[in-house]
Image: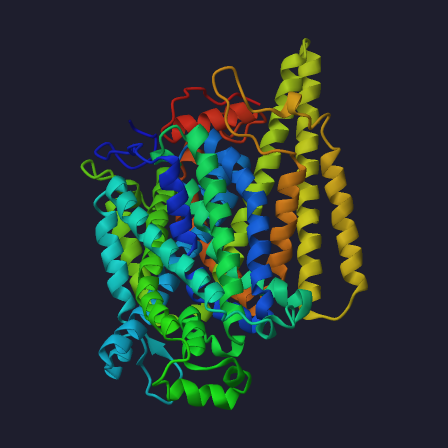
Length: 608
């Protein structure tokens, strides 16, 4: 089955459908619950204090809004590529490339972050069981001497190499491996929560004040940990390998997000409640929280000097059981971080594959091994690049950058589902028109509404983004109020722009195909756009600078290579005034997408 890409005649382009809803939930949880909980709890607590739990909860609630938009796209267009494919359908090629470029940032860099975190936990575990301090050099090898605070992590290459080897075996073997790793990871985290509760280690003093840095701190914490929620985008990238995607994709996306959020909030509350956040550290916060309680009494934890003494002279444990749990978690964390690294490495080649199929990336990445049904070249390149990043680039340099790119991707998906449904409103009115003059009037009205809604979405997003930036970097209040008012007016105008947003007119279901539909549209995706924009503005300005540099590199690739090899551009040359996938009819656009991406529909794009 040739998907119509530019990969050449000797390449198999279809992927085998073997994954179930349970596989998808476990993939999503495995991808999310890794560095986000084992590392970022410590970094986030330095910013938001105990309220890092609220940051996780806010991220989860914001992602639920976006996950509903993802679910509609994933069930309607069961193709690999996730947000890249959805943006391609809703906005066109150039913005889709930008989203794909941000997904490369999300998947590739997330794999590197989790690999480095895995190396930190593994090194700590090996030092504790062997007593050999020299092992730490495999995770913190000074490159420029001990006086320069910059180290590389050679051990992180090992987990990426292992994950790459499993991925090359195919989706089903990869699924079994991920399911085992995720199940072990969830068992370890459950042990942490139960140990904190039944050992009596959770202290009210550690949770007071709960929000020491106020709302700005909670928002900055949310921005930092947001990249940990990219797991459900990874689920969406597997659409082309899922049995009955119309039913299983929404379950996998929303289910994995709900489970991940519950885990994040529970573990974060347990960890920050067990020890003052200054003792959590930046690499192994869960183990540190357990060991502080194992070695030091509550009174010793109150005084920083006493805590340092009891930790250094920890021969007789205050709570021996927690010391055992600490060692178990130190070793068990390897499984959770392994699953997160593995699933991120699994998602990246599928983004390469989809972009290459559309001619926007090099055709080498569109090749599928006919025996294993894997994108072998993409897997190899991803593994090599991720190994380099993991070895040489520290976690804190990447977390905010990944979160910013991920939030931008989610914003495009939320806005895309609004524009997609707007096409259905226009299509219903167009089909109801009887006379050619009426049809032309409906066509003109649609183009006016489309441009109006697109412009309002731009002002809505920009206003909330600017308000958040001002809140995070200034003490001025009146500009924030003004910008929020502008965003509110824009949102209300979007709701009342079309003739009707009712289900009767906007439904994407047909007599033979009933995909999942995002409820309460356009309110739900508008709320998703708003929360994403607000969290983007809370991130440091240095992350914005790096993000703009990354985007500039991507646009250079697009204009130097992608635009000249685009499948969309080649097909557009067959039409005098129409570009495929940008037709006013949502049905035409999605049918064309499914046909091009290996689906069953054979509908061709209409002429506008």
